[in-house]
Length: 191
Image (tube, rainbow, N blue to C red; front, top):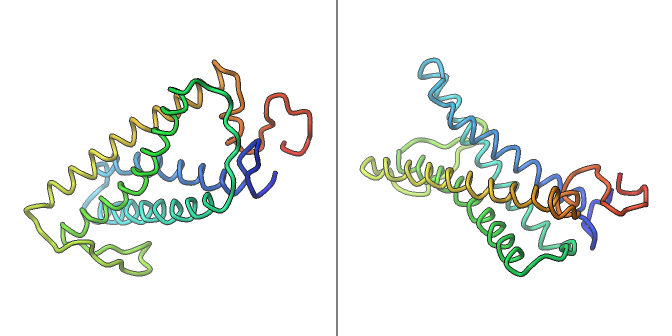
């Protein structure tokens, strides 16, 4: 499997960024929803610190992913009606915006609440805004609403990929799966 993408499929670096960010987002989302299950205030503080650090990791990996994406070509799309192409591009654009907006909204929420923001207890990050307890509830709501919007957009993304795979029976999903041969591929190189 090639590091770089080609006309037929995504390279291993693009796949690494895609699946790592996807797993971190899903895991951190579930983790965020389970925050109330923490036993005692210290465990909740530690869980919240981990949640924030994972969110910042998603943001950093996403920036690296975009920089990598700019430096290489994109595989050719399988033929699809114009409306499907537009829907796919819209979903991808929304995913990109939300993958940036969600960690930034969490950082903003943390700043508004007047809390320190440490990255895996290694160093502190600066506040994005002055502490303002009157705005704290609003900032928390923004972070939560962005999360639920991301869940909807991710569901649309997964549904589109499954539709391509199960109904259209094309290579759209296979191009992003690691260690999978494309349909109609008789070579052994992409296994």
